[in-house]
Image (tube, rainbow, N blue to C red; front, side):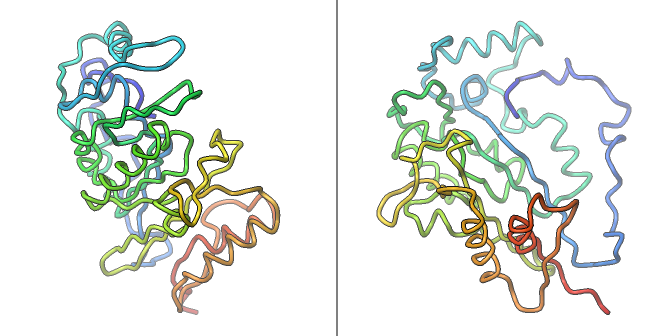
Length: 281
């Protein structure tokens, strides 16, 4: 999680920041159409992080133990030394940008657990509310993020206005979304990421109540919200698999990239989600 502000001077110095990374090389199968994908969970760019970016939000918080975002900045300074606020938009990624340059992922997908909004309508009864000012959106475009998954327990932290502004802000900078939308059809729809000369990557996103998403956040045909699964039954997973199969392009087959599926039914959805070209034989 991008939740701590650590000055580069406080980080270990390596002779080569990318020395420990695998060398970028063609797919070992010889498949010239292989697509390199960067997947990142739980990106949080609110509170103290938002506060040291060029366009901070109102620092007031509604948490039980911290009432001002300045408190998080103070903790980071105490642990790691001074922060040169305002920092530039690339600062929060640290050496990750060097890794991106080295490995050159063609698709970059994150789970964005921060509303991008100026809304003051924080969700009542919720203890943690993450938001970043829309004018700080370059902190995502600096990393060339292609898609933000929004089916999480923070996308509604600042209410319906916060979700709507998040969707609009991301669209304005051509970052696709999955897992939440202005209605159920939009929340259910996959992000379609085209990779020139190779194909496309489809991203579906789902949430469950067990991940902290209230049922009231579920999108409906008339109401904005999250793509929320009602349960994890075999029937639900088969429905997911059917939706994935409907969007697969002719001439592609599905396969598991690593490991074995937890169950036969979940495997059906996973098999539908990973697509590569058929083998030559």
